[in-house]
Length: 313
Image (tube, rainbow, N blue to C red; front, side, top):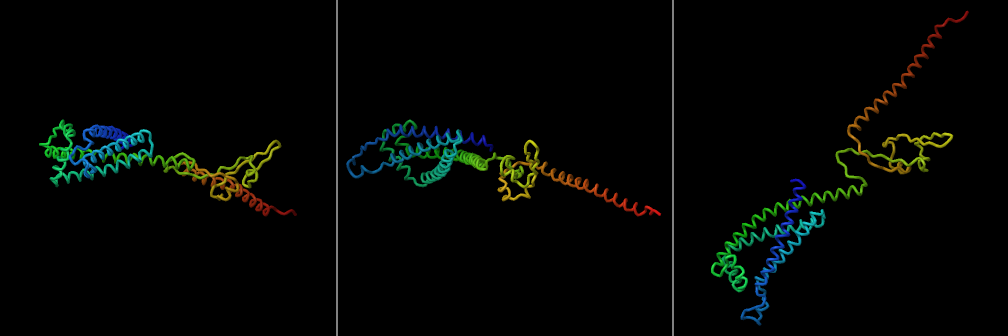
């Protein structure tokens, strides 16, 4: 998958998750008013009054879950849109943890619902204690007579929806993890280039180390034994000779106040420069050898002519 496709998928997933989770949280908050928070049982005033209502507990946990999911998706949307790495990391970690939790919870609920029949009767009995909630749920076809059958069909429908959501969320988690890896590599590359004081370059381009010598007006340049000085009547001109880097150690470079640097070299240029230098050195040596041979031959010819010359009588 391409980078822009991964970013678009992560952005769409975070936006859709924020909207849906916020809608579920608001819906649960609206339905919570129908739970009858004041106890109406005949056991009011006894020790049972302090018992925790399971429906209210589940309702509160669901509201907290969807509210936290909406907040996390909103943070992820802002982080992906503005390339904020800490926000993307928070959203990625939450998405992975939530994916694992939802998958395990779905498997656990489906196994418990179909393996233990008393769960359905317990849920219907608990719902019957909240007539206002049953009245609101009656719009979806729920009643005391068909509560267990309706609960079974509802569980099957929820499991089918959850299976589809798990597959979709798996792809979103994978895309989000890849996008986080991209921005992490970009951040590390930016920090590395900032520390080295150079822009990021391709690793396949060869680098050559050079030394930047001081200016001719500096005291260190005037005391350099490697430079050649030519004086004129008007002013001093300093000419720097080319020194191979192999002939200069780091200690010598520090003594000469040289600054190390790196430059990019073309592989073609570096490979072709060596034969040229060899050809130049060979031609230079031949040019020096020719006058020497000529002078040697001239000297030998003069010797022979002197030997053959007749002596005067």
